[in-house]
View (cartoon, rainbow, N blue to C red):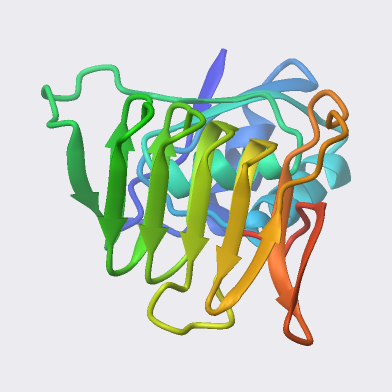
Length: 206
């Protein structure tokens, strides 16, 4: 059975989750997060609640792209739930986040002033520039520029982070050449003016 978190306008998920778990006969939980925007810290708290009640998360789904990316950054089994949704344009604004559905191919250049989530790959020869974070639900193999208006707090996160070039604010770096570990989401961020690449942690997605 899949547990459904309540609408975020009616009850906070932290208050509702223990009661939902009491109704679940199995210790393997399937969780529908609905429209909740849960970052990595939120999801870790959710996992702690499950663990405290003797349960484990089998998988979760969400209609909020940032929740999906945060869950992937933690290595959780997750998918974006589009069921029942109306057809959406290739580019759409969701909760202040630009969502692009589809692969960027050679010659494409996607630009936005805030955060961007690409639900697809960024192929070699393609570029993405964002004033905020760049998040790729797929393979990043082109050029990514986060913080293109000067933000040094911006990050680049991808399920497969092997770009031709990374830029954060005014810093530039080449992508790593070694193959990433299976299931390891990585991030690039600035550390004392230098771009570093590391496994995505709880601070990866705001």
